[in-house]
Image (cartoon, rainbow, N blue to C red; front, side, top):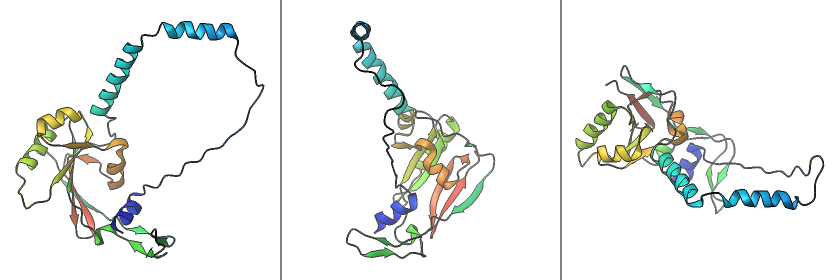
Length: 203
């Protein structure tokens, strides 16, 4: 049930539609032989190994430095606000056994069912100040405190791991920061009863 509620909260259901529009305009039979020969001649001149290396290089670069999360700037003042993850249920929700888990017209709050297991720390890893701030938080963490998940909004994943000696993540396509309405970094997200507390910290 917890997993179902979290799935509902995050709105992760995707609907894909496909349609065959048929043939438009004039259709032609088989392509001319001389054109096929032209294509084959061009293809034979392609350096396949060089192409593979370039594709691999671009993929590695993209994995290390995904697209920057735009419209988030460095915090110039401390700011605290709260996010309510509650979701209104417009129709009955049943589990795989057909048992009703949420009735239409009710409001679900996943934090009333399961606690946030980690604190979230969003940083711009292109900022040495924010990297240092993250390192200080990680180094001073007590064993009885919740672990921290470091989430980048910009910067190199590999470099951040090396600097922090810690696993990091990246908010790809700005999904989390958009959901939580984060506008400035660094930002720390913790649980405050049935809400999420977001603190943007000026360094």
